[in-house]
Length: 524
Image (cartoon, rainbow, N blue to C red):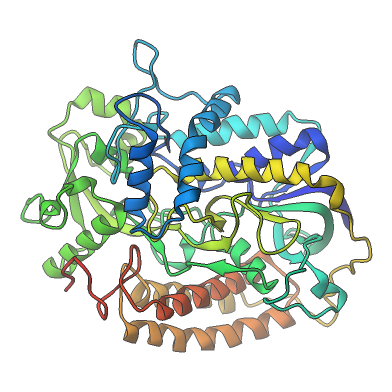
């Protein structure tokens, strides 16, 4: 079956939905959602969106905080562009119906998170992402030019390769003509032709055994673009959120927002010591890479499975009102955060690297854009500043929409694209071949490519991954496609990129910390 659209959007989080709303006035849009449209990483973002709003904050402070958190690897011009655009993008969210918390006088109630020198995080209690997701999704569902395909899986983007033309990473004329999209219920694959495609598929937290990401985050977008010979960078920088709720057996793990520390909660070890002051003068509000490594170190030294986050000294009513989701979740496992400390542990959270894009969100492949966690924009450098990610999505989706519309007359449909060929394949009836490989992959990444790394660990990970890669490619070639085999293949592709780029970086920088190249923090 073939479909045709002016704009194809892969992903239904803040990056994909905001882009769709901006281009829908100029043509037909198809949004492909891997699961239900509201099951995205955006939905689970608790903290908020960073933007300069009131004095004493200013753009220069936000810029300096972003560059500092990124360990001086951010693109200065991209940082300035993003920070200066932030207030306008926030106004658009309010126009779309997002309700940010306000003080009694009507001013926005701003929070403060790790690495920020001022209060600048706009929020909706501790469920900001859910509020944004619902507002944008409601607007999308009401738009007559937007078609939403839920529970569909993008298998590959379509380029000249599918016409039998050899494509290499060095070529400058690779063009995207749409994507092959799987309906997992019927095993049928649509050929979706598009004049322009937006890749907004999110991150890859499920490369690891413990992650805050929803189960859909398996690195699909980066894998698709890399296989299409697009440029990918900085995959070694995987951010682990320092404070996920320690609740063995729960997947994904529940995030304890950094805003709780910004509100005054303190990290403590099992001697009840506020240990963060030993690692950084900013204490519990140091940037995430520093806090995650410190917690990891405390756990290794003590032999304990978690540390504590202490909010018992804070006002009970204010805590319950400001963080109702966290309070309710912890009470569900018999932890009253107003009286008891919260057990927390780092968990895979955010993919800083990804598909390389310019300031317009344009990838190295013509007519293909990327925004959100799937993209590497230059904003985050080697480590993302808290609450800059929702902002980044809005800015680059906006810029991409402007660029797409300026060049719309130059983008044409390619009609001689062949349909998907699955001749000779059979339905895989042994799901254990996939599920066990996923477990092995997650174990390899968690054990050898986590918060702290070494050359030896990375080499072991690569050796074991090569076996998984051979087995996965063999199974993929023989199988009628399912979302499970496609996800496994994408995860293996992503793991290779993370490991190889980590092996190439001969230093400790930001989120990539190697005991072979020690820097600042004493790791045991």
